[in-house]
Length: 348
Image 1 (cartoon, helix red, strand yellow):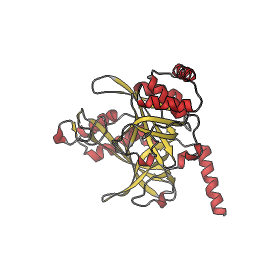
Image 2 (tube, helix red, strand yellow):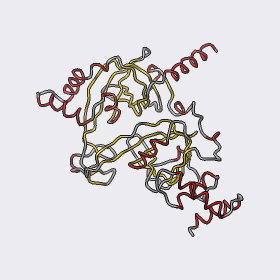
Image 3 (cartoon, one colour):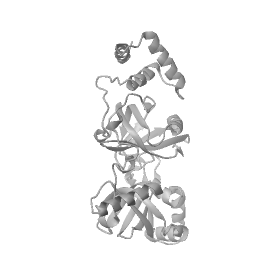
Image 4 (cartoon, rainbow, N blue to C red):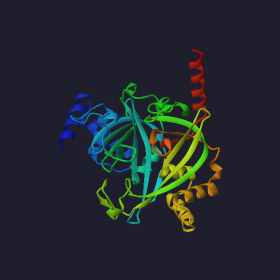
């Protein structure tokens, strides 16, 4: 018998379970799952639910997660969850990805599910759920580390016996990491800031050739080789949308990258590129082509209110730029609470 399994079995028996009760527990757990998993995996899930931790397999705080780490155990609460997206791989096969955010009292990290896991957990997971992840993998991205659920990872939703006092409560998870501020309060170098403003100007949309996996820029001399992922890939067009935001206290240029640009424009990067290319063929330069495309096709965005989070970078050409990490739905009840809280602070 595997050493880990033997350890868990002995700990379960110390808790008063008989061997037959453990087998019945394994059977019931297997029947309750929507996907196939090994007996060892099920025993590991039961161990987590019973508060049994394998030596050297303690939970890792989110702030301690670094790119390249493997087989990490993490306990957190789902702070955001998005709809799954279908995509086409380089080999023509179809895939599905589900993105969410996991939060603990030390920070927040993007959580990524692929294919069958994406489909299954889209049905099971909801915002506010506590989840225990066993054997997750930490991969890098332009925005920092991401926690990926692989085929050998295990996810336990709302496990029993967890001390939830070590996690942020459901009400505060949205504002744990990002601080809501007015635009006038932003300073160069600020990180983890959240602003709500109105799109007052459409600057332009730009492109570069990026890796289809990590989205980082591919050097034209590399001929489709991504030096970050160490793989040959077919470069894709990555869109960058620049707009001006106003919130009555101030004004700042905001930059939306790839899927954030696509979300604001409600158009895929490929479609945007093809339309901008048409202007280039008419003799426009790159900047004017992007400006004209926006003014003729997306003028309706002027006056649209957005809630975004990210950081402030400094450009020698345009000054401060708010680099958008996330676009959030505006929750009116939450906005009312924020206003009431601000009023209470003023009164005090």
